[in-house]
Length: 374
Ligand SMILES: Cc1cc2nc3c(=O)[nH]c(=O)nc-3n(C[C@H](O)[C@H](O)[C@H](O)COP(=O)(O)OP(=O)(O)OC[C@H]3O[C@@H](n4cnc5c(N)ncnc54)[C@H](O)[C@@H]3O)c2cc1C
Image 1 (cartoon, helix red, strand yellow):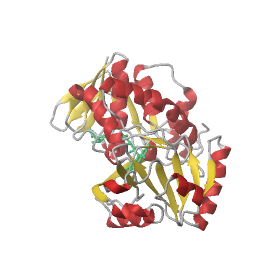
Image 2 (cartoon, rainbow, N blue to C red):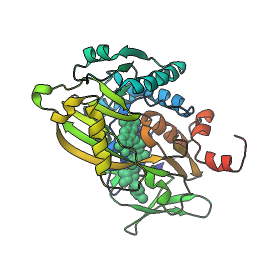
Image 3 (tube, protein in one colour):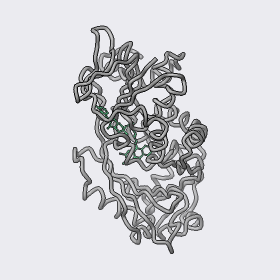
Image 4 (tube, helix red, strand yellow):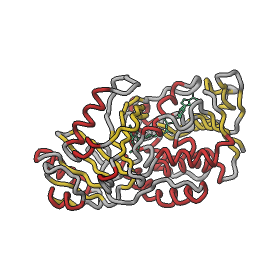
């Protein structure tokens, strides 16, 4: 059996890898593999610190995918021989001032009510753990289950395993025989025939001719890569998330001493790097880890997160020959093990987890619009 995967971001590549493991042959089509949202992502695997009010269906998905991460990362590292910079060190969420402390403690109560391991500590206890924290940090929450990985390394590892199956072209359209999808038409005029087409084109999934309308929105984020001067290394030893006047900011350390500072959240349609977004990140992190001012900026990237109306992915069948897997919004790196497994299950016809499929059904919005009970 042969699948054409449209999109070589982390979701398309991980899905392709799972299909190959199940004995399928794959062709992956992408004009710029690994250069979409997956190139920008900080790689926080954060089921607890990503908990926010009003996103109930998302938590179980994040938890289930987080449980799968150790096995996923170990298998990928072993198969590819790549170091993925996978870190299972805890995350510390810090309140920039007393007002932020109140919000942090309210959020900690919500996280605890969901059964997550949450430990609230004072600002001075936090500074003992991380001496680079600012004197103004008023309190912090320790989240032992929130880890990190380097998504660029994950993508490189997957490409090293699958590179021979890659075609560097844009898919223009799905090819249908009138009843089901039979393949894809490329921008250079070639057609590729497939038993199954899997659309993992991130924020662009709805732009392919023949795809149903998908309620995707582009949520842009600016993110900086930094290098700390040698005498300051390691600037921090765990992921530091800050709440500064209600705005989130984070700093993710990598084992090589580099840091990722992110990320703005904008729906302004500006596809390049936003001066305002970068300025705000630097201003906010200064309230939490002032030593960032001493760092060298090595890279600034802006990309669009593929958002759905309820921030839950859209994974499901388009027709008998086509599956879509997109809408991973700000959790696509965390959700990769679960999302790629579910997508591969749909493609191969493995027995479905019906409840999970209902949660991520791409048609759930139209059903809700029509008032059809789910
Ligand atoms: C600033 C930022 C920070 C983030 N931080 C985190 C984080 O810390 N943790 C986390 O879990 N998630 C994070 N995310 C979210 C995560 O990056 C995304 O959810 C995830 O990368 C989505 O993966 P994807 O493969 O669906 O999409 P993408 O990585 O965007 O890949 C889609 C691919 O499809 C290709 N494509 C598009 N159209 C076509 C076509 N017509 N033909 C062929 N190919 C096509 C594109 O070239 C692209 O390579 C972050 C995102 C951003 C922007």
